[in-house]
Image (tube, rainbow, N blue to C red; front, side, top):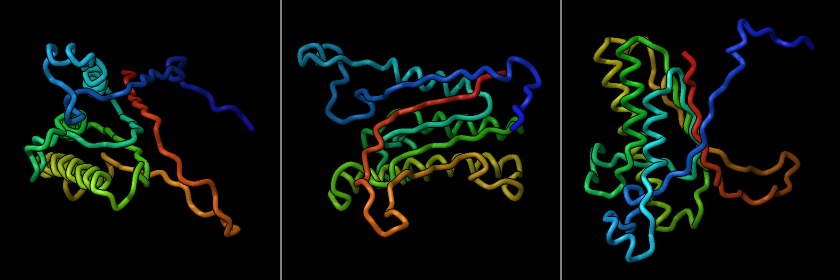
Length: 196
């Protein structure tokens, strides 16, 4: 097999960053006030959220995210706006795509989450997370659709040209035996393409 030739040396460079994200904006009950946090021995750290936002804003061609959950920006949902699911990540991604559409530039986002969430599938907590993820995706797709319509590209491109969600899960082996039980998709990854 022949090795593919690179047009120039910089094509071989990839810039990848990995972040973990949880703070008082993404989980109800974590203190928002530094004074309350120090009393409870809890550290409020927005640095990872800030790093995500910075990475999204500087991405040039694509974003790839793997996470256990993908929800947020509830302030812009069509309903349940009063929920405390305020992290900016989904809205930042949707706005990034919308801006790229308006600039007539190609951009794609790939989000990978587990098919089977941790916990009982029919449990209230799991069902809430599924509902919130759905509201998050709906908000993102609506933002992208409005941008496509604004520049009259709604008949040229489809939403999945810009934003895709993938659900990982285990399934039964082809020989009919059970495979290992589904494991929690606990890897959180964020990658962006930033070469100019």
